[in-house]
Image 1 (cartoon, rainbow, N blue to C red):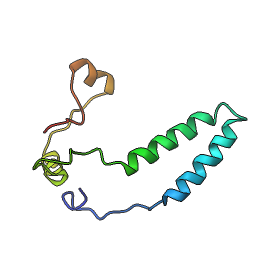
Image 2 (cartoon, one colour; image 1 turned 135 degrees about the vertical axis):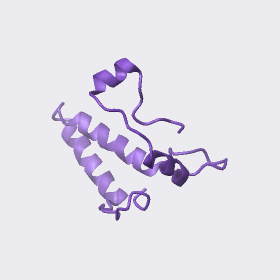
Image 3 (cartoon, rainbow, N blue to C red; image 1 turned 90 degrees about the vertical axis):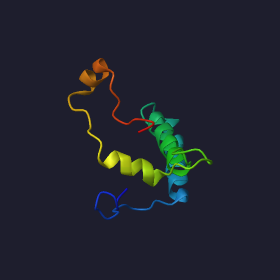
Length: 96
């Protein structure tokens, strides 16, 4: 994705142990504060989605790179989210 867009990767790696520690602390704090409970839940969900491969099936010939190459030249819809939903358009197609 970065290579196709002419950019260099710029991110920080967070080890799973750090996620687990933060989730554990937030769960404990969530016992005393209702406002913190959803934060722990969403952090767990973010951890799950960051470590599980959901891009393509384990079989077939399509690749993530091929999908990204198609997205580079695609025209993206403009306007507000509400306007796009009224028109029935998707921002991220499942099959380009």
